[in-house]
Image (tube, rainbow, N blue to C red; front, side, top):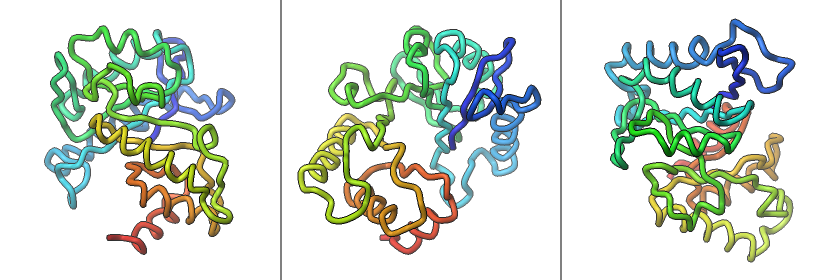
Length: 222
């Protein structure tokens, strides 16, 4: 689940673009409060069928990273009972794991916290970096930065090897990996890319078509 947030007059508003900002659409009202209610109703988990599986809440900072993250950290603390946390490098998993993405200025205040209720979304350069998985549990990248293939015709062998190499490197470091901006029109090209992501062991598939992805995964459930 992903939320795009903007710091506006001290409030965290949710919108994909600035022209969609609405003072009533806050991170708390649209995401944190409903998730807290769901976890309470389900006895401490999000998914009844997989009670030990946390929901990943990716929070994309659309305004300057440092002040937006400081406001976000304050907003997350009241929900500490449902949020995974890290203290001195030790992670405690709870029903929801918040991962901060977007503006990279959030990294310094995140690293400085003694107790964190959020984690950092890394980039390809962090695959071999020194930060532990307890700080960067996820590596994300724009598909089009690394791959020319858009699902039509054979996947070039060099690109397939690069995809599998990046995925393996992330997993060796105890991290998950995802790519955004993959083809998302409902056609054979999209399914071809999804097949390659599954075969490579990518942990997340990004899409706006949740029903389409659900149908694909059910059809290819191994």
